[in-house]
Image (tube, rainbow, N blue to C red):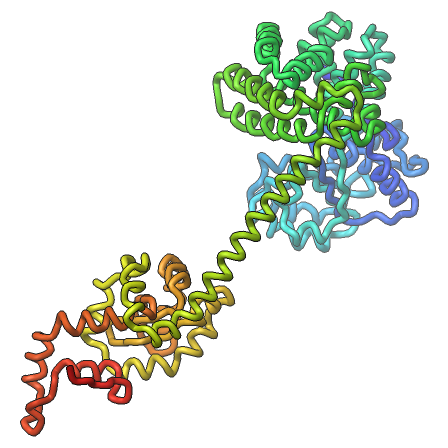
Length: 585
């Protein structure tokens, strides 16, 4: 018989053989024992954690007439046929290649027929998240109310891609990543059964490299066996996984923390010359840095993860390294790791990474690392943080005081303008906001503005403000329309800083124009202007267009009032007779 991979040979055949999923296996066994079997299940979790294996064991257990405590016997014809994949009543479907509506409709048509040999017909749909939207809709009704003696088991690595309507019709079981200790124990058991010599540290390296997947662990173990001619050694395991030894990692981290760039680059060069994978090396550094950080707070957690192999050098380095340094290093490592995925020269990124980590070590880690005792870095670390925090608070308080004084000056501005008009003019002309007033938009509106249009706008102005958001309403609260025409609206602001903010807020302008369209039937363009500059702008316009207004006044003037001033007439038309006050020079 041809050689079979370890993960196929040692696939669990009973619930008790499954590793690291005790809660799920106990629940399924109790459901079988008490005959509380649901019509649909969803097995979700990372790859290689036993989802498909649990589905097959469950299919055997519910159809086995000799099951004991929810476990299949694996000796009867039904169990053997399901294990071999030859029983027609247990159907495995790969949704990645059968994800169309037609395949699901075929299932929906055949599900009506009773099982031929077994007690239950079981559909195991793997990678169910790959089904199309139409396929999910076709499966929905059948999944909710399947015929008697039919069970659906859906397996997926990405449950967030499954519609909520599907999930709500199933019993969901979340498979967790398998701990390195459990993977290690399972591999030791398999190696002993195969009578293979092995290095204990090599198996630990493989268990950590699997990252919670039992299938990945057995695949790496298979590679190491082939590479080492049925012998597992530490060197072979490191070569197969692309990892580096703890001693080399400790040396590299100590060098960058000490700010010794030259030595750290030399260590990196030896790693690259040994053919180690760059991304794997980066992951190892991240894992080592994370362990240093955790060891300061929870040593027991790190010892369990490292399966008891925590060296004295590691403990000393964890005590001497401040947490802030590790935070900065891990952030830099994550950034470089993201960039390395899209490059063909990862060695360049590793060299840059080494230089940056050494700079972090010189800036933050050099003084604490030299400290003999662990409490010193912790006691010294908050000092710069508190100093920086107090400096920021003082700066913010200063800015708040400046803003308060500016608001007081603005509130007093109208009174100063009335009391001393001679002093108000220079202040207006020197205002930076005056340069930003768009006269090209204001003058056309003034040319066709009418009092009737302004009255119409003033009537709907409160309702228009109420239709805005809270933030927009706060900006517009100290504004009012001062001129209106069929070509636009001019809005004056009491305070220049609010005028500045409104001119740059395009969402506010759009909201005002849309609101006018709803209330008066036309989306008039809105032009903003500071209130203290509005009289100057209005006077300049009337002066500049005096001849034009004179000609217009002559054409429309009545014979009984030949002495009427066209400028006054236009001003009255714009702002109303009750507002215009004519004073003779």
